[in-house]
Image 1 (cartoon, rainbow, N blue to C red):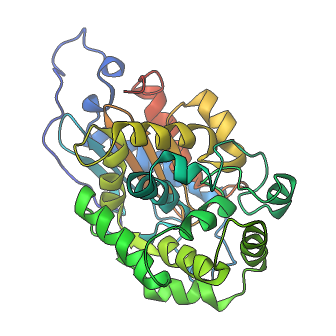
Image 2 (image 1 turned 90 degrees about the vertical axis):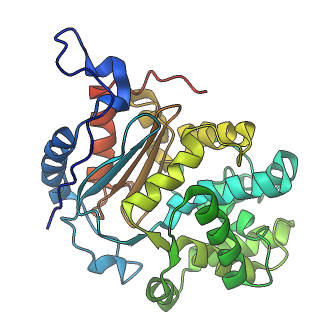
Amino acid sequence: MAEKIETSHPISDRDNPNHHQSSLGLSALTSDQLNTLIAQAKVKCQGGQLPTYIPLLAQANPGWVAIQVQRIKGEGVAAGDIRCSFPLMSVIKPFVLLFLLEQLGTEAVFSQVGMEPSDQPFNSLAQLQADRGKPRNPMINSGAIALAGRLPGKDGASRCESLRQWLNQRSHSQLVLDEAMLQSVRSLPNERNQAIANLLATVGYLDCPEIALDTYNHVCCLSGTVTDLANLGMLLGQDSPLISPQHRRTVNDILITCGLYQASSRFATEVGLPTKSGVSGAILSIVPSQGAIACYSPALDETGNSQAGLFIVQQLAQDFNLSSTPHP
């Protein structure tokens, strides 16, 4: 059942007839507007499909929709099924990148992976073969598996725990490892990811493909609510003494061109917000210098992105003139 969250009024003068919400960006957003948007998004859910290659994801309620908007100016606003917990899946990829940029530096990270967009599916082996074994970018599976191989720790569990603690400490999120989801991921062989890892090892981008794959599976099963996801997004949405501004900009720039797989180019042109999706139905959009938009709705479109989540982000970007927000 959807839960309506009331918050303090955003920073705006709503009694001024000359005031336009589009000029204020996210600070003008009200809880009533967000609940209206949720109702519209629930209609959009009806045409989406649940993924079947991870059994537990196929059991999700396709009608769930949740959103949390975290703002630099003003209180957060949330609506929908906000108590739902879900695995981040591929939405963890930008934060693996951010962590390694902070730990290893730009040169070391991009010696392992490129930063160019791909027009192939997120798990394309053909793309990796055409690129002679170097992953095109960190947001597709080959790039994320290569970077999983660089996380500190002796095995997948310890590497995931290092990342989890780092993210929770810096973002004040409460991410946990969903053990049941991890078992579900492991229950069916992912031959494509195995082939990707083997090729990465053959050309020298992985030392131990089995540990890298296990790490990748672990980190994709880090789970939380839309509140946790929005808090994570604030690591990329605002200045912080804990994160290098250059590393934050690098991640946001890659999200613009690579975060939504084949849909990235169109979304960048129409919406223009750094955005990442996950097969669980999670969507995270960064509004630089304003905040972060976190959505969860498990019904996916044909590209594998949350149908309702993309609708919500597109509407917010249009209604509040978010696309024109410059990068900090």
